[in-house]
Image 1 (tube, rainbow over the protein chains, first blue to last red):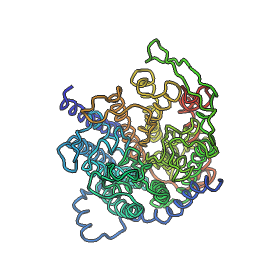
Image 2 (image 1 turned 90 degrees about the vertical axis):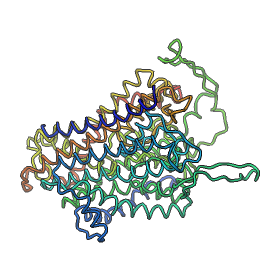
Image 3 (image 1 turned 120 degrees about the horizontal axis):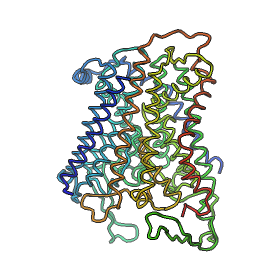
Image 4 (image 1 turned 180 degrees about the horizontal axis):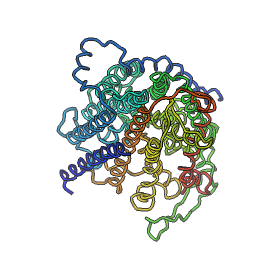
Length: 31
Length: 600
């Protein structure tokens, strides 16, 4: 796969995972 | 022999404990903001201070800061080929390895799917490793501080950025400078040069090139911050990272220091030092237990590979990835060799530190979730390897800075809840009644760890992702997979290095075949296992702290007695055994009891 595309994909995956942690914080506010 | 074996571990426990008590007072003093900083520092603090934050704002700041830290680390590793201090023109790491490394260092794990001396330039070592090591270590520290303030009933739990400043500038930097000077004196290199060209002892005409760099700057915060990511692939077994017996003692003590102090800081900030001492004692007992276990079964027992069959044997091992579903393994005859094994298992050990130094370090580095190694954990005797695994599975034997005590809080809440149910009283902690909401949050945070270990291990053990990566097809191969995900989930960073997980540089023509799935899976495990067990306990502390505090009554379960200590110890051991005994049986125990050394 193209190197630049792969780099973007990996960066996006990391930021997406951190976003999931933020959603978990929001869920904790509602428990 | 007795003194040689046992002096190091127990001297470490005693010296670190003695130092931790007075220094924890300094930590509490700084985090409570009772100091008066020099004018320049006050100016910096004022710039960082965005105002007091409630627990939601504090936690959101923590997550956003770490996201930016990940992106910055990612960018620095991508830019490596075009940056200075790269005389041999190293290309960038593979994209999946950059993803893995950026998460690894941002989460204080430092699990390395690369070898620093082969794959990173000095620019990357300085600008990727060092900031991550200082900042990721401070994040866990701040999380615990926020929890303490929430327990004190404060609606505003401080300012995340000011707390980060306090931890880095008033604690990590001065401590790192002192340790760094000692390491420099002991022989660690400190230079911006990338290579030293030397003549060998064998012949002055033969030139050898040795990788050097700012090792003495990286090493102190690597240990003090329980980071564990080495400048060299060999980590603390390398004579430049760990030159002498004295540096080895300091090295080990440095990684124990902050985890020890933070438990006591927790008690001092809450005004409940006796409670903290009980918790500290439970942790100390568990740490001594893991040390004794690894030393007894590794330093005082022979390497079973050299006590096997006196003749060569051939075995057929079932293997899903081998042609025909079977792998033929021939073990050489080694038992007849005139080996003296009275010094125990010496495979993968640095003898210059003493025979028990490897087993001691192995137990300590996982208990405090540092992950630096001065011996090869993959070479530990099978049953001795249970000790580092248990340290990672329990994840509360002092643990990482802040997060170890946070994990222990989860066990405290569960233990008190179960005890309350048994005697028919409403469970209380710090005078506040524990409700369903607090128990739910504690259980969610507690279950993240086993789910993140057992789920991916099962997936990889059942597919070629795992089977093609292990160096042994039997129980030892399973141990390698369990260890990898345990290390990732505990934010530890040590590894069984027989596992093929290194892609290397992006232009590497022959990477490990399954490196990419290991990079991505380990990266995600590190990330979720870092932040979910930080977010939920902060929420739990905020909800508990908001409740009305009642004075101790006759029916209150006191949390500063030996009885409470035994309750806590029992809770930890029972929950730990229920969660992880099955994988211990499939991995190291099966290997120890099985007929084939090293599982084939």
